Length: 143
Image 1 (cartoon, one colour):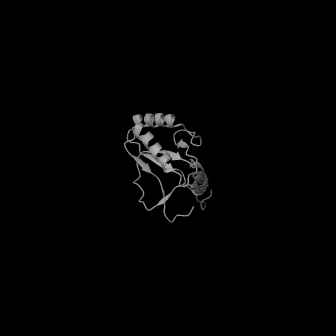
Image 2: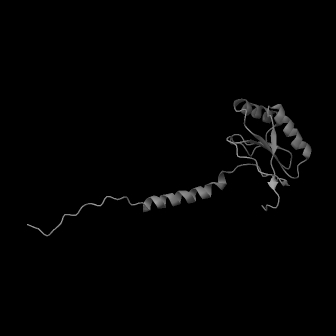
C-alpha cells in the first residue's frame, strides 16, 4: 500500500524542433537550386530607362537573338539550340493558337544587327503575335 505515491500522467505534446530542421534544409536546397533552373541563351541586353511590365498570369514566349544573329525559343528543353526561322514561326503559331493571350518578348543581343531583331519581330507577327515586347536591362545595373 503506497499511499504517498502519485501516478504520473503522460505528457502529450509535439516536439517541433525536427520539423524546423527539415524546413531549414529544404530552404537551403531551394536557395541553391533556384538559380540553376534559369535557362537561356547568353545575350548582352541593351540598357534602357524603361519601366518593368506588369506580371502576367502566363509565362511569356521569349525569342532570343544572339551575337551571331541566331534565333532561340524558350519552349521545351532545347533552349540552347538555335532554331530555323520557319520552324520558329511554326512553333510560335502553335503556342499562340492554343493560348492566344500568351505574351511574346524578344531578347536581342546589344551588338546584334538591328535588322535581325526586326526580322524576328516580322516572323512573330506572321505567326499571329498581336504585339511583341522588347527586353532590356535597366540602366546603371552592373552584371
